[in-house]
Length: 179
Image (tube, rainbow, N blue to C red; front, side, top):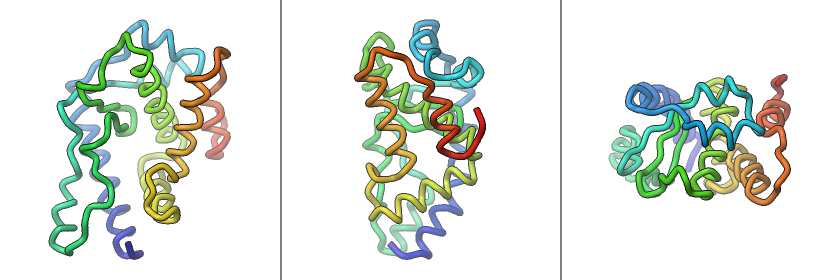
């Protein structure tokens, strides 16, 4: 993928993120008492109170992918294969993955809350730019995107340790923002 296409993703990504947040947030729900209690040792209450979850049958690919077909460029990331995605403070999850009493559900929710913190620390435009550039710099490998690496590392710590840790503070410090 060339620099022109990376720029295309950055320019189209920000408005797409904002539009998806606007689309999904009104039909979402806040965290349950149980979800909040499970995540409060890791995230600030204000952050958790801002989160809205929207269940959907399938996460749709961005509308701007249509132009990629016109360029004979295959979309490099298929969002329809994802179980969850975060749009600022709105977490969209597929119904098949949603089970609020399931430990893996809390693990996914934790991961997405890390992204909420990243959006809060960076802002939408910088998050999208950092995400896409990190993706391009790491050979378009989703699992090597620095923001995903951080989310997966913290998720792994959440899944494997019994001791709470300040996940939001770790995100803020790593991205240069004071907690």
